[in-house]
Structure formats: C-alpha cells, structure tokens
Image (cartoon, rainbow, N blue to C red):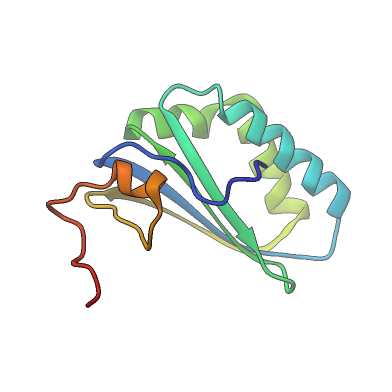
Length: 130
C-alpha cells in the first residue's frame, strides 16, 4: 500500500466500495502478499480513483476503494486475480466480512488539508467551526 493515508479524489460524484472485515490468525504472510499484489493490479484498472485502508490490532479492517462508475466496479470485481483472491480470502483469511457500495455525492475535509480541499465542492462543504 502507499504511504498516503487519504486518497486524492476528484470532485463527486464517484463510487465507494467499502470492505469491512475481521481477519483470522491464519496465513498472515500470504495475506499481505496477496493484498500488495491486488493493490498493484487495481491501480491499472479502468476508473480506479484511489484507496484508503486501515486495520486494528485485533484484525478488524476497513478498506474503501473509489471508482468512477458502477460498471468499472463490476470490471474490478470480475478481474481474474481479484476474483481468485476473494475466494481464497473467504476460505483462509476472514472470520467475517461485509461489502457495501455507495455513491458519493458530497466530499469535504479539514482542517487545512489542501489535497482534500482542492477536490471538495465549496457549495456542499460544511461551514468552518467558529
């Protein structure tokens, strides 16, 4: 994964694929190798905009992958390596997971985050705290 924690995204609308998961204690090295491989592949997928991911010490993680369209989400879902790795994850790496797909209509950030502020729509941003 990259050292950047926040994805640099365009102005909405775009789509978020939210993957929440609870890891088990099996295959840690294989899991990380597969995650790194998928990250390299998704960057070349049509419509991929960025990703944000975190996992706590108990193995609960959330990864949000951003795409420009539902069609490109489907393409990524059907990509051969991704599909095979997903099936392996179900068998070997996860106690439980949830996938949610959402359309992002508004986005804003702060404080003093120029990368996010540059992509936010000022008409829909939250008012500054006073």
